[in-house]
Structure formats: structure tokens, C-alpha cells
Image 1 (spheres, helix red, strand yellow):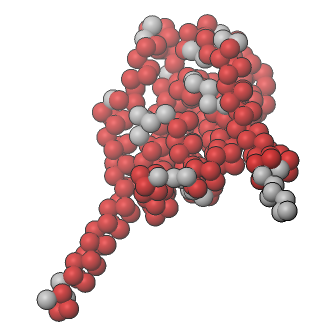
Image 2 (spheres, helix red, strand yellow; image 1 turned 180 degrees about the horizontal axis):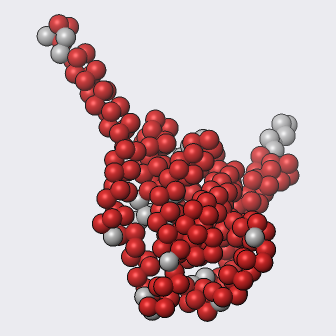
Image 3 (cartoon, rainbow, N blue to C red; image 1 turned 135 degrees about the horizontal axis):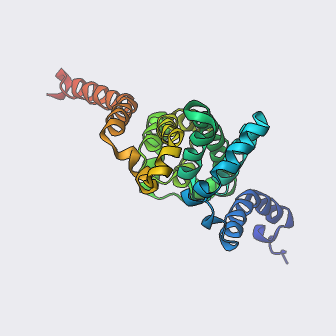
Length: 259
């Protein structure tokens, strides 16, 4: 009598491996839930920044480079845990460190945090999703693989897409880490400069009581038009490839053999 073959799902080694793959994503999710459960989101607000602005400026003046590293690390942790408040942090960076310094801290922190989310998602879910991907997801994956950098730059430049979502999608669609880092790093620079420059003049905004106008800064024509130009430049490789493909296909279809 033959013995039944062992069930692979009950293999302790495989089960342990699956748990290890899920652990990074589970930790990031647990961090977000803990932050929300303890009401941390109530403090990531412009009102909090306004209330403590003098103390924060004094802290930066007293500690200099340490304050820069602490701010960048805090930004990275917030992005890694997908905690809402990137806009507030970027504006705060400009307020505390000036336009260029604040933008540099924000870009560095956001990129590091995004890499953590990307790697956690790819480790936990990437293989499973690739194995069970339907036709629509397969087509999206093909598009990312062919023009991953252009697609990613557009997703980063357009501020209508949630930052956490753009961290997850490329990981689940097989985009390489190198492309993800380059697309994220350069794609978030324009928006970071805009909001850091707003933060650089935040003292006057606080005095005028116009805090609510900060969120609308990126929709001003002076900001939208350059962003639209950057988006168009990012799409040029995609458009060029499609036009070239159609021309080649047209030449092949219109030759003597097609008669």
C-alpha cells in the first residue's frame, strides 16, 4: 500500500519561509495601525507646526546636522509605515532648513522609506501576484517592464496618485529596484522643491492666517505648467517607442508580400 504524498502546505520549513516573507510587510502594517490607534495622525498637522514653530527652530539651531539627520530619518519612517502627512513634513522641512535643504531632506527620507515599502511588498506579495496575475495585470506589468522608468516618473510627478500606492504597484508588477529608486528619487524632486519653498515662507503664511492655502500651492499655474512639461518629457520615450513600432509594422504590412 502506497503512502500518501506529504501535503506541501503542511511542510514546517515552507510555512516558516512564507512567514519570513510576510514579516517585513506585517511589521510595516502593524506600525501604521499602532500609529493610528494611538492618535498620532492628529499631530501631523500644520496647526501643530504653527504651535511649536519657535521650539522647533531653536532645536534646529542648537543641534544642526543632528537635526537634519533626525528629520530625514523621521520622514523615512513615516513613508515606510505609509503614515499620512508627507505634505506637512515637506513643508516643515522647508520651514526648518530652507528650500534646498528642506527639499533634500524630504527627497532623501521619502526615497529611503519608499524603498522599504517596495522591498517589503515585493518580498511578501510579488511572487504570489505574478503567479496569479490576470490578463489586465499582466498587460500592466508588460507596460512597466518595457517603459518602467517613464511610467514611474509620471506617477511620481503627478500629485494625484497616493504616494503609498506608487510604492506598492511597481513592486507587485516586477519593476527592478534600480528603476524604482531612480524613478522615485528624480520624480519627487520637483514637488519637494515646490512645497519646501512654500515652507521657507511659512512664517509669513502663519502670520497671515492662510495655512489652508498651502495645500493648493501645487495647483497654481506657475507650478502646474512646469510639472506638465516634465510629465510630457517623461512620456516621450513611450510615445517614441509606440510611433516607431507602428511605422515598422506599417512597412512590414505594406510590402510586396502583403499583396
